[in-house]
Length: 113
Length: 113
Image (cartoon, rainbow over all chains, first blue to last red; front, top):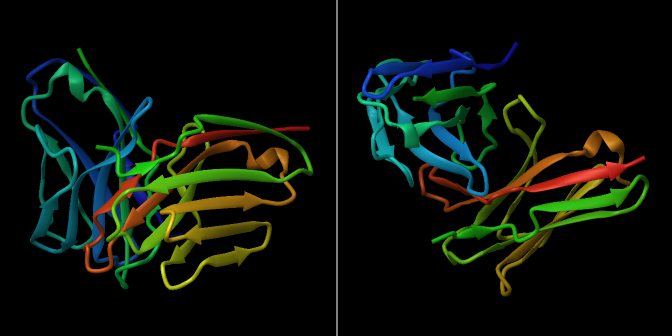
């Protein structure tokens, strides 16, 4: 089954404690992205990746890091989480053509206290 | 600066009637547009898309209209069904934009049986 898998689904952490949210896709897609969803703001792109070792900033990259060492995986790293990073996070993948629909993961609900 | 706007946060429609969801954009470089549907506790799923070389695209009960001069697109659902109740996001990207996608804030559609 074609899918994008995020882990964990729910996470409560404390300010400053480094965390990683994993994302994996099994569709051999070139493109992967991370989004955060906040009330009244919709989905905002954090980072995206065009292929292995190729990443670029989206609209709200501050406080986040990503890496793309393998085509299937695109982890989101919060080196020092802060309460304003409390949000619902989605990973997505798409490809091979540039203008194709994205497949989204189930989401990760992150709370930073 | 919100480049993609969905000015109606919510919409209620009677079952069987037409639902019209609207989206405006400001970036004239956008040339590919998508609509996604999102149920609670799930990731967004792709619904329908349109390229700027077209002004209409249909898929079953769903039709997207694009008015480039007005920088406006709309999603028509006919007939509306209770299962269509969800949050709808429009999204836009530039060809050659390497999957940098901008989403609107979403419209919550409620279809009343």
